[in-house]
Each structure stands twice: as structure tokens, then as C-alpha cells.
Image (cartoon, rainbow, N blue to C red; front, side):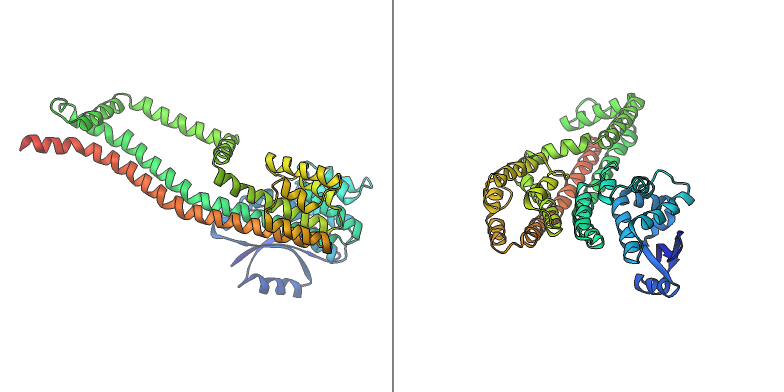
Length: 403
């Protein structure tokens, strides 16, 4: 097995990055530890990512810049470095690689101005509000490593939910693309040949045969225009997806179906309660934790309900009843939060409620995957089969007339 390894020798400011082979990650960590190296990150390379080499690693790093940075920062601080030394060490590696516009370098510039780590993170573009709040809580309790651990657990939860959605959508997308490609091939390449063969069969043919002959003749006559139209449709589809308009349309379509909208809300509620659990554990009061949670990537409906609940709590209402009135928890969640009001363990109750919504969403994705896959296969089979049968209908007419 091949692993992408980033490690450092304590006392040095150079981060070593290389690809190594080992039986498993535990044995590789033991080998590096025996050499006196501290492992910053260890990632198994699949065959595809190994072939992509540096470009595959760059793609992964771009997607996971903040979580990767947090893991490396946690490792270095646990090894005894100060925050500035750890960030400077990570930035030094990027400077050697001549990558100056990077997260560690931008953060180092902020820290060198005398700002706190949380303030420096808040000054960076697209910094997650949850990470900023978690680091601020770690600064309050002088336990930055635990704060980074909490944020990484939160990020892992969100990433797992997103990966489930992506994994569930890959197969339907492949089936739909394959069905479209086969249909386009039949219409553009095969049908014109049938049109030339059937051009003298206009009289005495059935209705379906007449339709397919007309379509075949049209495609044969305007083959270039048809191909150009298909290419333009594909280009428009790519543009529609890249610009995010496809996502907006899909969300509107999903929100128009109450059952699916409720399941999507489970995803957002899992994120919201996990954020609350992280912040409450770090010492934030409930009102401040809810305010930070509202800055996360939640839906407008959840954000509006959260603001409504926050207003009621600030006016002196109970947390459990405020969340229930804002439709942010069911009866089980309300009772859990009511119990937390008595024992003060709000972060435990929030974590349990988050897990409940996560499990519901995961169950929904699994069920939808099992339903959509066979339905799509049947739809593609019917589409392609219909085109093939319609192309061969004139042959059946010819056979009938010969007899």
C-alpha cells in the first residue's frame, strides 16, 4: 500500500513530504517514529490518486485545506511547539515549494501582527465560523488541542454526510449519462442509415413506422445541425452545473416535496446540533453558541427558526420549549434538552440530538439509493428499447407485406 506522508523532525523547520509504501498505516507510523519523525498527516493513495501524483494530491489538499491545517497544527502543538512556531513551520514548507498564497502563510502574517489565533483565523477569507469559535473556546480554556479535536470531529461528521450524498448520486448519474449517450448514438448514427433504407416505404406503413421514418429522415437530412444541437445541450448542461444553477434548481425541486424537505432538514439539524455541542463543550453560553451556529451553512428556514428560538431564549423562555416552538426538535429532542436544563449537560444532549438526525438522514439516503437505482435502470432500458423497437418496426411491416 502507498501512503502520502507529511512529517517533520523535531527541532527542524522543514516539513518532509513523500510517498512511502507499507503494509498498513500503523506500521508506517511506527517506522517514522523510530526514525525520530513526527507524523503530520498520513493518507492512503488509491490507484487513481497515485497515478495522478502531485495533481491528485493538490486536488485533495484544496478540498480539505482547513481540516488538514488543523490536523497538522494539532500535531505540532502537541509535540511542544508554540502556535506561532507551528504555523511558521507549516508556512516554511510552502515557501520552499514556492506556494506563497497559502493558508499557513496568510495565518502567519496575521499572527506576526500580534493577533490571537482565533482573530487571525476570522480575518482569513472563507474561514469556517465553527472553527473560529472552537479556537476561541480553546484559548479561553488554554486547551487548543482539545478544541481542534472537537472541530475535526465536527468536520468529519459533516464530511461523512456529504460523502454519502455524493456516493449515492454517482451511480444514478452514470446510468443516466450512459442512457443518454446510447440514445444519442442511435439517433445520430444509426437512424440515418435506417432512413436511407426506409425512404421508399412511406405508403402502407403503420403509424409508429411512419413516425420513426419521419424522425430518421429528419436526422439524416439535418445530421450536422442535430449533432451541433446535442453538443450545445451538453455544453449548456455543464455550464448549468458549474455555475450552481443546477444545485439551486435541485434544492427548489426537493423543497417542493414535503417528505424530501423534512429529510434535508435532518441534515441541517445534524450540523446545527453538532455545532452547538462543540461550542457548549468549549464553554460558550447557549445564546452565543446559537448565534455562531446560525452563521454556519444552514438553510434559510433553519436559520430563521434558530433566530426565533434565540430571541425567545433571550427573553427568558426555556431552551427546550423555545427549540420545540421553532420546530427545531421533536418530542424526544425537547425532553433531552429539558433534562439538560436540570443537569446542565447541554453539550451531551445536543450531541445525542445531532446523532439522531444524522442517523435519520443516512437511513433516508440509503433507502433512496435502493429505490432510485432500479427505477433509473428500468427507465434507461425502456428508453433505449423503445428506440430500437421503433427502428425495427418498418422491417416487420416489410415482412408482413411480402407475405
